[in-house]
Image 1 (spheres, helix red, strand yellow):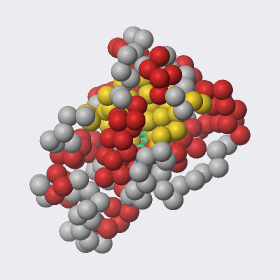
Image 2 (cartoon, rainbow, N blue to C red; image 1 turned 90 degrees about the vertical axis):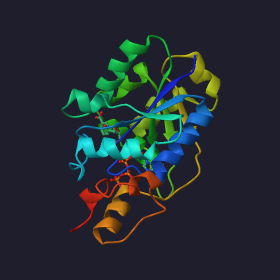
Image 3 (cartoon, helix red, strand yellow; image 1 turned 45 degrees about the vertical axis):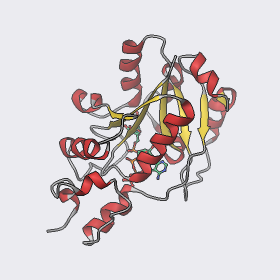
Image 4 (spheres, protein in one colour; image 1 turned 135 degrees about the horizontal axis):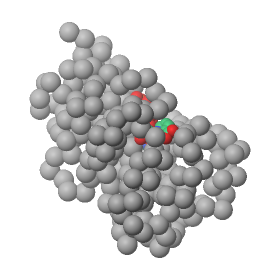
Length: 211
Ligand SMILES: Nc1ncnc2c1ncn2[C@@H]1O[C@H](COP(=O)(O)OP(=O)(O)OP(=O)(O)O)[C@@H](O)[C@H]1O
Ligand SMILES: O=C(O)c1ccc[n+]([C@@H]2O[C@H](COP(=O)([O-])O)[C@@H](O)[C@H]2O)c1
């Protein structure tokens, strides 16, 4: 069964790095991919753009394509966006359909600090996306947990609902939301780091510009 993959993030703002890796993950895994904005990201300062503004940017970014969608369940749930809770909610909806949690290798390295992190593997597979400029040393506890779960065979992810870890070598794009916020705050125009839909309405990038 075609997996459902969730790519969670703060998306403050969504940028071409997010879109490109999500798109390639959809191709590599032959999966339906949803971008899922966090309400309150558990390990980050509060975003500059509020939930409504971040969703508006995601919709503007995802125009004119049919492969990537937005899932706003964490915003509707409110409170801190613990991924384990989200995946359990999804598991109850999709039955035995394979679920894949997509995350960049920087986020993956921090997994042992996540809420109920070892139980994540019971509800989903993990798809770890390479990210340029980020080659973190994985903590020993994480290695131990993933050793027997690693695979490079996508068929394994289609055959089981959860439990595998696959590395996805995606095209490296050294783009971060931090850098984009810095550029916008400095009055610069990061035109080709962001999806063109974000420039269609000046209100979309207003949270990051100094007036
Ligand atoms: N250029 C990129 N290549 C690969 N993965 C990425 C890239 N940018 C973000 N990600 C991944 O996307 C997910 C959501 O990231 P997030 O929304 O925090 O963006 P960010 O650019 O890392 O933001 P910030 O700079 O504010 O920390 C994380 O799993 C992160 O590792
Ligand atoms: O569940 C957790 O404890 C947890 C801790 C840190 C991050 N996450 C999730 O990881 C995703 C990426 O987070 P971030 O901070 O890189 O935007 C986002 O969906 C967060 O909700 C989840």
